[in-house]
Length: 274
Image (tube, rainbow, N blue to C red; front, side, top):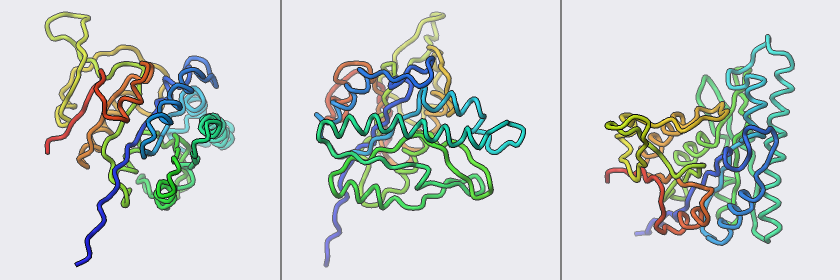
């Protein structure tokens, strides 16, 4: 009897737009932060798919033209705003790609708008094959939050978190061993039940308890894709595929590397019951 090949394990790493860019200043990169993150990925040298957010290159434009609501004829030049948002994300993504190539590390940009499309509110995938083919060649696939067109004559935004869920659901040749979300904080904080205005850091949580957390509000920035609550909604869906999740502070030196190497670090671990 022919033995089935065991799926190779990979990581999905999300570099959040809020720490890669200054969301309060449109089109502003945090170059030192980005270069550090890229170098840690290179140093870890593990098989992964990298997904990054839009930050100040995507969110302000998407908000200006109300792109998350879809086509609206009352919004002047909305179609132009749609492609401007796409092009802005392309430019930001090219900066990251160039950093990898300058370090002789093979990385390939894959536009989410080219492989995903919507129909009747559901996201359809043209093909995951190109991503798996890149992995087969030891090339790092890099995807990013993007516009998504709709067969019904509209459009919206597909966030990095949505892309991650689609990959967890549709990858066939590779098994996702862990999803890593990088943030500007150490992870999740909950309100202290006994003391007002005091926060408690949450080191670990079973995914089926996420709905019952009294999350602390430690500040919000412009985010047209759902913020932390939207992220948790996707995390619950990801965990349904028996994939654990780590929320890691991308600003802490070496934390991305440690997470990719499964080393001990301060973060929030969202685990599944096996």
